[in-house]
Image 1 (cartoon, rainbow, N blue to C red):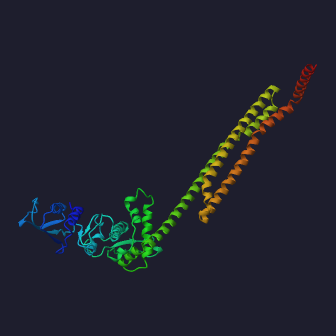
Image 2 (cartoon, rainbow, N blue to C red):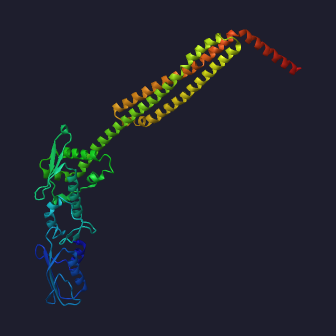
Image 3 (tube, helix red, strand yellow):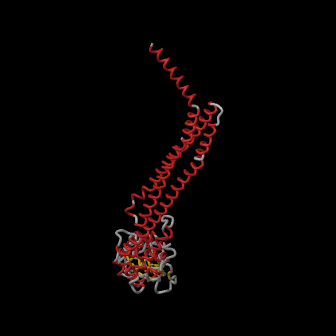
Length: 430
């Protein structure tokens, strides 16, 4: 496996000899130094090339054996760098940029070395051009993931990324980008945090990823529709990356606001149905029980047909108990009504606090829902109050009929109780 770090350290130990040809450098020394032995052995270990020549004290050393004497008087070598494209070592920045066509289809090597500039990409302080180049390569790879189509022919001179609009009515149908790399693009600053977050591997982190990717494509088409040519569009995107991010942020905010408003509308509708359903249950519960009022009134007729005061009294007590049970049932329904009203206040309070932030149609919808529910609550409260009063009507009627029929007996009984009380008071005072 190629190790650029080992090569860079060895190359520096040898004094960074210049390339004699396009991909080979020579080194000569006439004084023994153990660091030179270590560097030569490191070159072989790095697997970044081969020794075309290695002569120690006039004797050729086989690169396959690579056993250097522990002492020598002179040493000469020619090291040829691998040019297969698998070794990320370049003569200078110009050669790196000349290889840029291969980097638009894949990530820039994580570690690479520039011989003349003595720049190791992983070593601080980082060269600004290298940082920008790495960002551009990441940007191109991420754009390829976001594009609907891209040219996969490695032999093609131009790498094409095609973005298609999902809503043709809003503007241009599609655009094509031709990503490329050159020195001019390295003067711009490009951040890749956004496009990185839009990659498909971020699906678990963002529930709106598909919509965000769609908004990114639509924004890209909108932003670059005024430019002609794939390379011009790509250059404009890189040069004005911050303005593009601002437009995307505005478009995303518009979508999220609309999504939030739609969600709020659904929550209001669900709350309205829930409250209405609970009030309907209260009405259903009391509708069957209120039939006890006319039944109790019918029982009043039996009082007039009773044979004696005892039978009549038993009927009155029965009707009184029925009225009391019905009144308690209605009182329980009143408590249920209070809980429903409290729930309505809680469910709608958060939305009413945000009314200023909501659009007019949503504000009107919430206002209408609250007004309708309050009207239902008022009607239900009034019905419960009236029915609770009516629940005592049979008892009062029965007591009145019983008192009227047996008024003589009741009068005598009252007089007897009054006389008895007066006698007790008189004896107590005496």
